[in-house]
Image 1 (cartoon, rainbow, N blue to C red):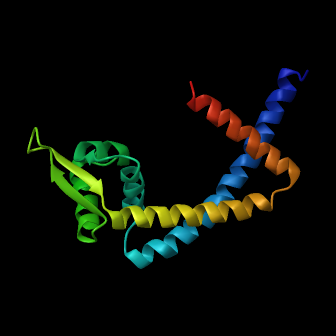
Image 2: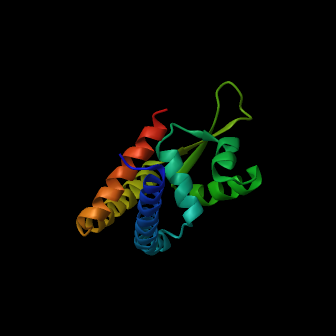
Length: 151
C-alpha cells in the first residue's frame, strides 16, 4: 500500500499531467471553435449560452444571467444578438406574461451539435496519441470526476 506522501505525490503528478492535457486540448478546441464561431459572427459567451440552452427546454433571463455570471441587462444583450441571428427565440410564460423564456431554435441546436462533433473529433485524435501513462492518468481522473458528480 502506498504511503500518504507517495499517494499525494502520485495525485499531484496525475493532476499535473491532466492540467497539461486540459491546456493542450483547450488550445486545440478553442482554436477550432474560434474559426467556426467567427463564420457565424457569434462570441464565445453567446456560444456557451447556446450550449446551456441546448440542454434545457428554456431558460429565463434571470437563469441566463446567473449561469453566465452576468447582469440581467448583459444577458439580454447576449440574447438580443442570438435572436437576430435566429439561434434563439423568446416567448412569454402563459402564467405570467412578464416572464420571458428563451429557447434554442433548430438553427442554434444544429450549430451546437456541429461544434460538439468537431470537439469530440479533436479529442478523439488527441486521445489516440496518448502514451499509456497519459491515458491512465486521464482515465483515473475521469473516474474521480465522475465519482464526485454522483454524490
